[in-house]
Length: 291
Image 1: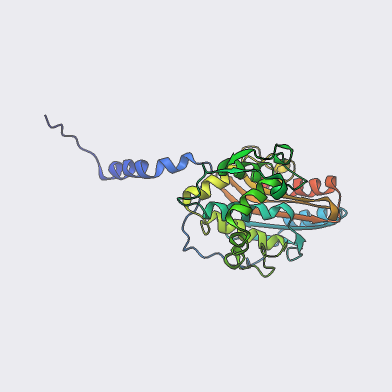
Image 2: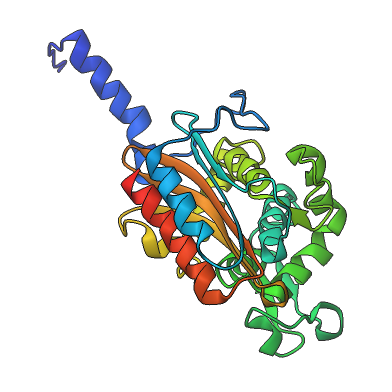
């Protein structure tokens, strides 16, 4: 038997759209993979409004050196405070390591590839848990990426970077095209790091699948005590932190997604205290929530 039924053209087009588009909406990150879209190296024009002026005034009263960059990716509106100041990037470097690792995946290196921890070769103190594990411990590339981004694990960085080669990470400098030369060089400004985040959102560096994979890891970081404090808890915040107490530096940079909002944000600090850096980061989060 052949069953005949009628359907309006409008209903047919709606059903087709649901079939092909709906699966993508399950991803919490509405990743834009139109890599032909042009994002300027320097965002313009700089937006000056009363709310951001109030934020600047509050930050100026807090002891330390701070930089803030915020871009509304949907509209192109850019807000910057002391945004050309250079800072030691610290663990912000781990995001380029993750990008380079995902770019290096092939038949010989997959997310399931197992790598071993050689304490003599890979050990480094500071943040992370692997440093306390036994030499010879085995990890998949996927688990190392989790340690790298979620825990900001220094040993995970070394294991991955030894495997893919530092050159692959440093070569991203030519792709990022930042005047500071980051990540080949260790300093970066908030505006420059924002460019990296916008490029990640736009699908410049990775496939749609790998971009979404990385953003989801970034959204599950153990460090939600900076910008996240001021964000609406319903927002998705895919971010990476950097910490270097020797220079009084606590950084937080990432991508904010919610219904109707799509922003990149970067807060860098120097010559301040942990509590002061938290206060500034929270103020920036509150600005984004009220935006």
